Length: 347
Figure 1 (tube, rainbow, N blue to C red):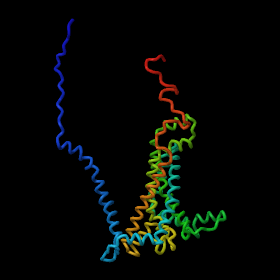
Figure 2: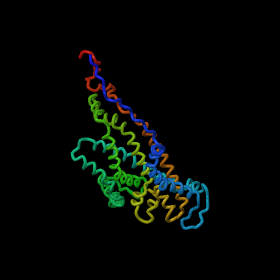
Figure 3: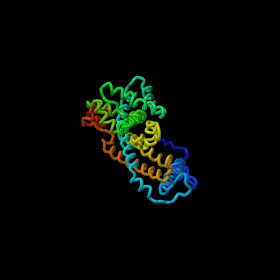
Figure 4: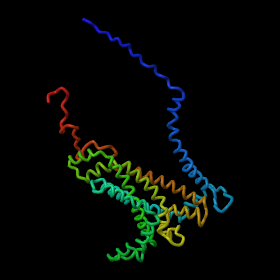
């Protein structure tokens, strides 16, 4: 019996090189260097203006004056006792609620429609973004005409059904509704596209298994789509909160005329940002008082956003559904509901 020996030389593993000091520093520090530009820009254009605004709010800061004496919390004390501030706060919250809740619900419904097999889907999806790219001034002019008291289209339609004309600019609640309609028209399509992108990332097999279990489209929407969209809905709610509580352009242009920064002759729709601008710049030029308004607005946005997150987290589960809508477990892949046969058994 002949034994053949392998004449090839044994393979010697290459020695592992110990990383040098520069390589270790590169591994540890390079991620921080890559993200540093964002934090530097945020510190310059975000943190510094915020801190400087708070410093100014502690002074009697007249823009036309030279001396700016330190007054501590006097601006905040005066602000909390100011009836115009509370009036503007109620206006801001009222417009925010009337505009944001229908806006998010309409965006969710519109995204669900656009997620279906429509003809010319790309064209429809682009069309819903047209209001967002339209000039705000043009939108305000058109809606100002639509909600006009004498020749407005809304009052004309109300007159056809026997309803008296509404003073959309002189009535407080009516002005909230008109401005909210303007905001919803501009931003519903924007939120719908964000929700649509999240809907398209949901696996289709979840809907197929739900259909097998007998769930209709409405049941699939509330049991699968909405729970899996919860992070995106929270994002849209936070963005809508920030924009809704900082509303300025729409009410400012809706009330055109003498001193429009007041939001009407009786401050019917003056928001906190308009009230801040009125005090910080013309006609009062009290920059310290306006900075105090800005800081309280910042605190209000943080509180309302936190409340929105807490409420939305309680709506439905965020876990990916693993069972059908009827409660039965989904069949394993490749079988008809029975367990797969074990390896080595008869088939």
